[in-house]
Length: 345
Length: 233
Ligand SMILES: Nc1ncnc2c1ncn2[C@@H]1O[C@H](COP(=O)(O)OP(=O)(O)O)[C@@H](O)[C@H]1O
Ligand SMILES: [Mg+2]
Image (cartoon, rainbow over all chains, first blue to last red; front, side, top):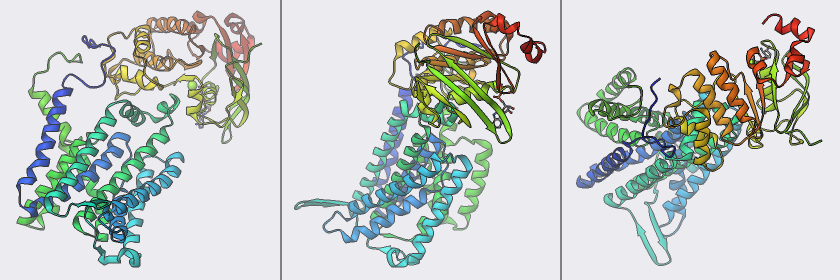
């Protein structure tokens, strides 16, 4: 046992000495990734915008899966609620507030559904694979509603006419309808969400969630209402997925049931696994990267992409199962000689 | 007479056809230490599970400060000041030592108290060590520390010296004696040396029943106890 940790005072928290450097590095990288598409054509900017929306969806999942340990296939269902709410409610609202009203409706619906379903499951003691299977069912049901309730959802054809993001108060109004402003709206929502989740996970909440992932029975014995924590994270994650869906419909101007299927949920899971579960920024960067590569490959050969993706993930499971970000920080740690880190050398 | 801190009133627990605890009454008063001994499968851990709300009793009641807690959720017991150390060391191995204690310090944060507990455990300067790298004995102590840092009224320790050598065991005895000034303590123990060393009120559990209760020597001299337990050990 060589536990010196000499310089550590009692005050020192989870984060190590490299904390500040890696925070500024991540922030810089994120800023570069967000700013770069502004230099591109408006078509490419639209593609990048959609990538950021899917990154937001991946982020919502990472908060649930990475931070609270609940693997969910339900993100597509909540994404769909947000998207359809904007496409259905949006056009009914006058002035430029349609998208906002739809978004609020979608978030409300997602919170309500996840709250009710989550309450009975989580307080009922359902965990792990069983919980995951129920979330899978949620997405299947949502897909079914989107295709069969044609009078409201437009059925297979979907709906057009979802209003762009906007706000009007009294006589003053603003809408984001060109590529640049749409991109900026999405980039801002993503940055704010990422920062907020990161800040929330750093302190007490992150500690408690880690504890629950490690040993829920112990956390409960310490006096935590662990089901309450898991439910809160589940509801928040669902609300964020609804925001992503709302942004998608609002920016694209339409929704279709294709969007709301298991494929979307699976993609989000893949992006989180690829980026590094629990790292928050990792899944965001991974989504952007994967969609970018997908674009390149698909323009070259359409059939190649699924093959490549499959091969890549099999390789990943063997080579870097924890994801990209942990792999990179591992490499950095190996290359940069470590000063006394007070560990088992 | 003041109300006991925690009281099991004629508690019975069945798992299907198996009777794990059969009508046990036990009360722990402020400032008291007591020991619970008995052969494997006697129902000791199950009794603790009932006292902490993890297992709902099939019959009988649990009173904390005179209030009926039967059927309340686990976290409600903890918030009322009942802390426990599990039989298998349960610490959060993804967190460091300091954060294990911080999580355990559910309400607010009191870094001074935390530092004091680190000192008490002999962990000064180890706040940043990953808890997963601690030795088995250190994990047991950390878990005791996690129970203490929340300033509990009652501390239930399930086999705190399991897997410890004689030196570590003696350190644990001293630790428990220290703790007694802070909280009432009930200890489940296998190690008779430990129980003798502690020298406190001792209950012997056998097949879910209390078969003897009293000072260590008194219990150790009991013929029935010798038959079912000490004779074999
Ligand atoms: N959750 C459970 N389900 C079924 N049987 C259990 C459970 N917990 C304990 N038991 C049984 O109850 C009896 C008492 O167990 P326990 O309280 O762990 O004994 P001790 O701690 O005294 O060794 C044992 O026969 C054990 O197998
Ligand atoms: Mg036991």
